[in-house]
Image (cartoon, rainbow, N blue to C red):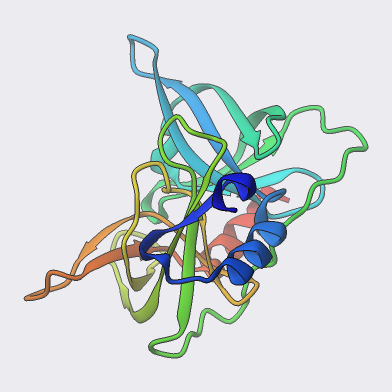
Length: 213
């Protein structure tokens, strides 16, 4: 069943019915991002997801950096050339747009608009492991807290207790059916071995989306 659905849940927290429901909901929205980086033109990978029907895609800034030849590949193997339309390095957020999208419409994931989450809310981070665009990896976990940083006007960070995988950066973190944050980096809890993820909230992404428009 997992192989047929091209999705896998870490730690087997979701049962098959829940996994199938999630797969149907996200499979057309989430994709793998590849680009060429550095002087040796090495290939880098990460994840991203559609946030508008006309082809806007959210990801993490560090996934693409100053990369060239950006390509977004969705679950069914279709590839799209994409361009950067808005970027906020300090928040680790970037918005891309499908080039020459014409009349094609894409399946966007809705963004949570308040930035408020209840402690211990169940959430899932989604994305693709490095160099593997055919299987979505689901990281289940819970929201812990938010904190602030002095780096920029984009100050908030949501902290989640969940285990991520390489290549998942730039993917969405869902609470229910809404995106509440974008996977950014691992988080170390003081005096605790539990894995964590640190992520800019959807409200910061919404602010950047206004700039992209």
